[in-house]
Length: 181
Image 1 (cartoon, one colour):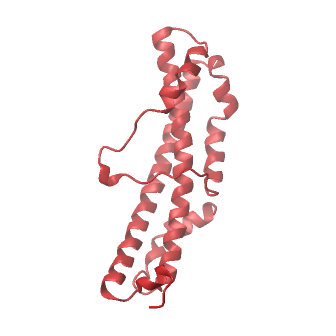
Image 2 (cartoon, rainbow, N blue to C red):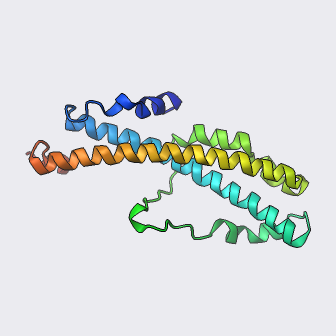
Image 3 (cartoon, rainbow, N blue to C red):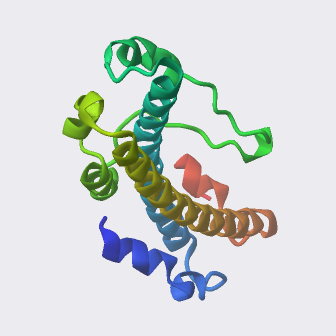
């Protein structure tokens, strides 16, 4: 899915007919939202990794006064492996390991801000350049987070509608289990 599909999903009219659409269509829309969220989530994790590396490089320079990459490389496992679990376990979302197709468009935007080549040449970058890159990544991370939050809200609304349908009998659980209702 591309930007146009995301805009369609995030349009306020996307769930206007929530109570009237078929259960099958409701499940399809939920899947559509989840796929978009997976793409955003993956790109955001890539972005956050680069952001963590850039911030660690700035901190290393402040502490060591050295612009060589050697100590940064040796610290990568610590930088990227930090425990960043949400403070509220009820707000935690499952993390998938695969690279969703929807991540490509956002990955390209991350790459346009901070390419792999830039990441390899950190010792050649000034502190001011690093700070500018950090600001640009942080701004884009905020955009991605906002989009994810909107998608989570849609997914939650769809799930609530599905749950209500199962409770009141408008939807048949047998459809999910592959049995006749």
